[in-house]
Image (tube, rainbow, N blue to C red):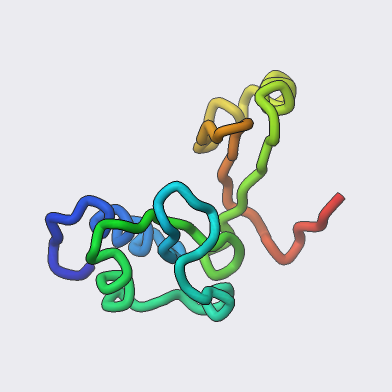
Length: 120
């Protein structure tokens, strides 16, 4: 890992990077990437690029899902009701998987064979 930083955002970005995730910057409060990120769908940036991206502490962190992040995937529930129904039917997964409350619903993160995932 790069030299320890006092910048909390950079520290977190580097933690995610050390987990094998592909990290890119996004403006705070937005979803769109701050950079052209197509190339990062298949290749992770290096640590020095992360240090440059997050040096100003004015960005937020986005993780590129899929094979480039070791198979990290996300189930996006657009409403709380949809998440609660799923969680009630899959209590074992709901209790174990990292889950984030969003403005409208929830994101549930997991590792998957991303090449085998299809839209249904």
